[in-house]
Image (spheres, rainbow, N blue to C red):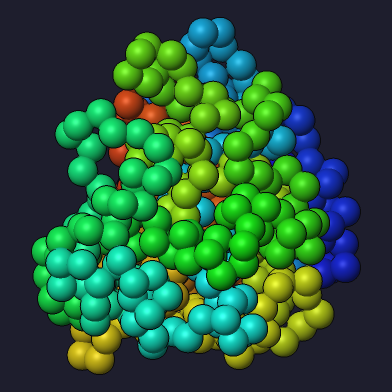
Length: 383
């Protein structure tokens, strides 16, 4: 379905008027290439289904909904309302935003040592790590907590994060690490005296009107399943990330479930706040600009905002044409969001590419859809 000629004030109504099923991915006008790419991803087996939202100038200008949200135990058609395990999109959209809210309030300081707030974190040479280094993935921590023994529970995850050794000196090298956001999620909880899900509901989701977004969902019927767990049970409404799952489904690095409607509202609200337009995005404009511009240590070429990716080897969702001033993030389950303030645009791609048994890469699909979207929007130069 394509929506054109919508003004910013029509954005909410346009989002709510979404179709319930468009499994054919019928090619339409200038966005036909996006539909073709999504349809090919389904027929080629890269993902069971695909949902795409292209936002521009305050409106959703194109939607694609095709394929299936479930193949097993029974086949179910993909819908616009399908909720997805957002995986690592939890990091920038919830946890980093929560940290920056606490920075605005004076409860946290970006360049303060993490050990100032969590003394146990200083173990094994980590005393010099600051919040900024966690947020930009320049902390020196390894990519994940060890999973080679059958530990379980949030308390054990926190203990392991506190005593984790370094693999690089703090600030030396960009290494994407879930441990960074496990610690940041803990900081949100410690400084707010709320669990991360309650904080997110109170300070982010409810103020923004994101009613279909949640941690620990209780209604799972319209959630896209991911894959079989270690006991052979299909994960549906249970976080896919193994570390977050061992933590009970509530973690700073993964655990958010959301849909295309809510994520489109989030993206547009962010772009509006960043541009100084009326918005319910729960940060000041200057804080958001800081968050979405390069904040990595001086001289480093892997460009990271505070929670957001700008220019690293993870930046395939930028495509060939969106400029380096754009930013975004991906999720392992097959989700991605890329935003370009210069053109007031975003590209949201939601898949459950890991369903039913591990899935395939959607890196090229993200790149190609972003390139096609930028071209359709008239963006022809990668600055």
